[in-house]
Amino acid sequence: MRGRMWGLAIYVFVLGFILNLLGIVSHVMVSAFAKRWFGTPFPRALTTEWFSYAWTEFGLAQVLGVTIFVALTVVALSLLIGFPAAYILARRNFRWKSLLLLLYFLPLLIPQMTYGIPLATTMFRYGIGGSVAAVILAIMVPMVPLAIFILMPFFEQISVNLEWGAAMMGANRLQIFRRILLPLTLPGLLTAGILVLVNTVSNFELTFLVSGAGSQTLVVALFYNVFAGGVRPVYSVDAMAVMYMAMVMILLIVALRFVRPTQMVFRLDQPKR
Amino acid sequence: MRRSQTGEPSELDLLAIACLLPSLLYILVMFVYPFLYGIYLSVHPLKMDGFSLANYIAFFTDEYQYKTVGITFRLAVPNTIVVVAISLLFAYNMRRGIWLERTVTTILVLPISLGVILLSQGILGFYGGKGWLNQLILGLGLLEEPLVLTHNFTGVMLSLFMQQFPFCFLMLLGYISGIDPSIENSARTLGANPWTVFRRIMLPLIAPGLAIAFALVFVMSFATFPSAIMLGQPSGSTRTIAIAAYAQAFEMFDMSYASAIAVIMGLFQLAGLLLILLLRKRMVTAATMGVGKR
Image 1: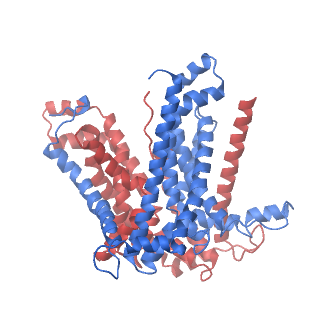
Image 2 (image 1 turned 90 degrees about the horizontal axis):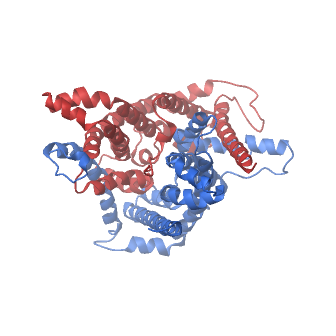
Image 3 (image 1 turned 60 degrees about the vertical axis):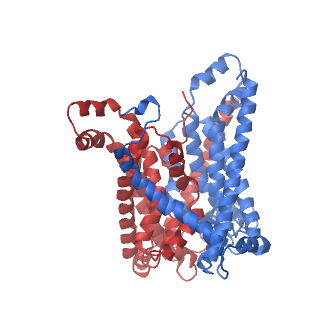
């Protein structure tokens, strides 16, 4: 009986949380299509003109271009740097390994606001602050470790015997890499790539701190326009938010085809079975 | 040369070093160096030559600045406790899987992927003075006055909860469902009631994961920045330490003072982390002592 009550309470809470989430999301959506909306449950007239207004007024073509360019570059570079490192970390034991793992874990553990300020300071000092390159370099700080930690278990699942077997049959390192490792870790690369992509598009703090006028991503531009409230009609800001949301939703739908939801957060060490 | 899976430390050959080097260099140049540079900058104030703790002294003697530490703690501590407690409750009760689990977890991932800005914008509309919630409450006649849930402390807490509950819940769910169910079943067979099973068997097993969850949520809440700006009063009751650091850097252009505040923020986060890990150590020792010989 008490178990039943617990179960019920849980469903009620989950339902409440989901309703509140849907309310939050759909409020933004409805507002984006509202002609004017004040104090009524639903706007009296609907329009799509805020989208074209937001598109031209906020220069969204440029912002969207920057966002996509940054996201794809970060994914490519993070995988390129992370892949070999993950391979060695999964395969070898060496003296300073745990220290190295801790070092790689720090950018994920420490909040971006804490190391973003010194990072931005350094970048502006060396004159690259504010550029698209700065945004890419800054976002990669947590994304390279993220790619490494996602890829490591995928390497651990591949038996070393496969590599040894191939080597015995005369394959050189390049062939082992191309014929054995790359095909077998493809799911891992896909998982890591998608998670890095989602995290890059929704990354706020680092991008906010190091970006300049021409290098804002969609989410940072959104923040500036929310913050500049009053100057902009709230509907146009919401239209921009809907465009951002659509982008993330598409990524999320793609992501969830390959990734389990619990993979979207930190992986805690499982207790030994 | 490859003794990889025997567990013995092996020396790194050239290939291994070549593989590790790019990522290591990246972290050293883009993460460690700026950090050290920030610390260096923080003890070399703008208008002075050489080493000086003037920035730190200025922070802790200026009420407008040191107040931010208290504000941040008052946001972060209750938020951490609420988020972890509720997450534990749910993750524990869902450890054997639930109906529609995949759908539920998918919906929970939504706030994580949408990011804080969109979430805050939505909360402003939904919970705002003329938002749907207040319209419902006033429409049903539950209250005379609309609830003031945004542009204050509550708004920031709301936004933090929305971001961190899914994160913490999924993390703990993954952890708890990894615990071998036969341990729990044995205890049940031996006559333990559900509460005893939780208290004596499961809690000690969950403790390490719980400590990490506590630490992560606390550290994240302590650095809260966009929620405190969008849903709070960034120049008043919710001026967190991150806002103070940002204002110094990009409004006053005093990078040295800003670095000092960032260092102070980092130190408080570190202190919180250490405290939690210390508590965990004590908790686990106490728990295993009760269980039997060790």
